Length: 154
Image 1: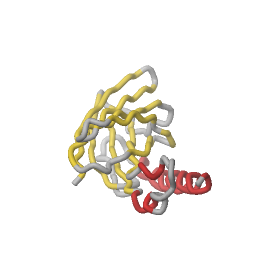
Image 2: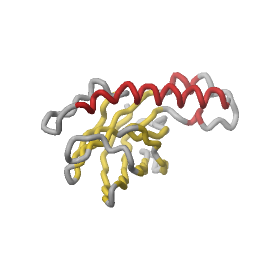
Image 3: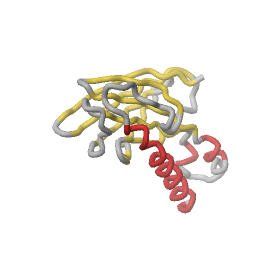
Image 4: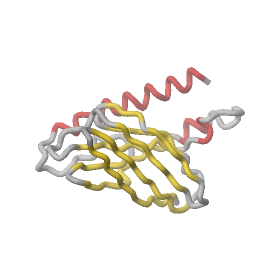
């Protein structure tokens, strides 16, 4: 169980590291999401900061663990990532970021994202079909930014 968790974390971190070349663009160009990990589900701009949300489907890995009792990973279906660029187009590497995800059934998930070189991610449960509200709190360099969007699981 512990080995699987470590293995999964290494895979996610390697994927993030491979996505970093996407940040070599200048601030005047549109963000290139082709090298980001996962499918882009939302993009927003707040006070010059750009947020690009990507979703990684990890349900295949959790299927192997569904019979393990007490496994937290068994309740995880996706990894929610947000890539953050500052107003100058550089990745924000020193920030605190958290999610509050509310599902169609009213269940709430409060998650602290783990950061790695301008990308921040946390495991989420999107098992129930319907509309989810994702609220993001971002703290960096004396800035506190709030973002919110809806995402539908079909």
